Length: 124
Image 1 (cartoon, rainbow, N blue to C red):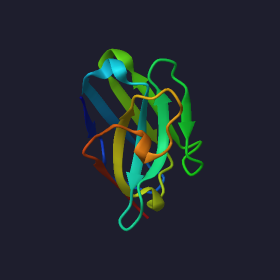
Image 2: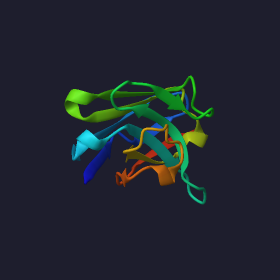
Image 3: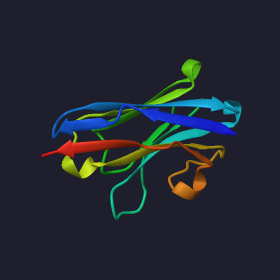
Image 4: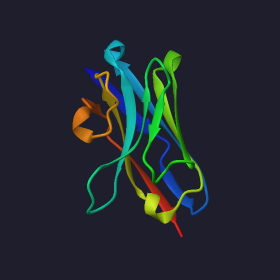
């Protein structure tokens, strides 16, 4: 079992920045990737970014490439999502998730554990 707790969401104006954090606890030695997804009202959960736990390789959705940065601190078992140049369409509940598979996971079903989510609202 892996427990994930997100923090850092909030309300920000368009063009602003937020940093989300996700702290992992439990059986963290099985983690291969940590990812961020988001879900807006009435929409499906969508992939945002993912990072390999050991090598630090990163992958992004085209919609956030160049604006968002995913990083991790293995000593703290924490993954971050730095979000810059935020747009109203970035408004969603953001979830972190853990995958214990070696291939790069970009689909929600490829992740095994999920956090409770944190709300990000970007006003225009």
